[in-house]
Length: 283
Image 1 (tube, rainbow, N blue to C red):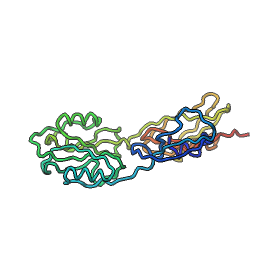
Image 2 (tube, helix red, strand yellow; image 1 turned 120 degrees about the vertical axis):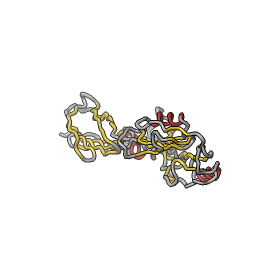
Image 3 (cartoon, one colour; image 1 turned 45 degrees about the vertical axis):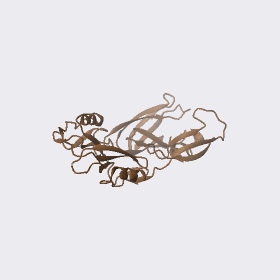
Image 4 (cartoon, one colour; image 1 turned 90 degrees about the vertical axis):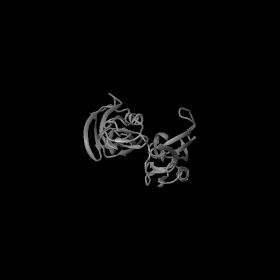
């Protein structure tokens, strides 16, 4: 759960006191609860202090340009930036053996602390060539497998604008059908999926103890997209499907009373509720 939006000031947790410490896990969202004590499921007294370790904002680092460095010097430079360097040998006609050809992510990229940065180090010229296979449209994992089987070293670049599904190969450099030296780097451009429309399902919880028909209005980014009649005594939930990309603001009203505000995250296909207000029947 996200501390600021899901826990802090949430009346469901009014009987607990929270003690916050911060951690740093780059793969997790800022504000996400990493650990808790006492553990989930335990019964505690009202007013009990619950210790939460919350993921802090990861520090952002610019990848240093280490092209032309000796292998160890490049490794040490990136390690000093709190990155995780990894060495990968590649064939290269223009770079002396043991010197850096490039990095992935590339020099100048902004990444979080702890990010793995692959350092491609020249193993010298290759004497064998192979043809770049036809891989456009493949999933990246299958394309990578084919390229490696052909003797190439594979690196990926991600395209946030493509409307193709996540991890779909968009292009390859050198191009399909061209010959390249075995052991050399082949760059595959892959859809990040951020530009693709995705579907998010939401079981909208209805208020308990209400037996009347209610008019539910659903607004996405300020636009009314649906009006429906719901009755909590017939079903505790009302199902809704949203289709889009990126993030959108969601507001749900009952009989024109603001009921739920949330964010639709199409990338993670999740609904992040920011507030849910009690429904008050009209006299």
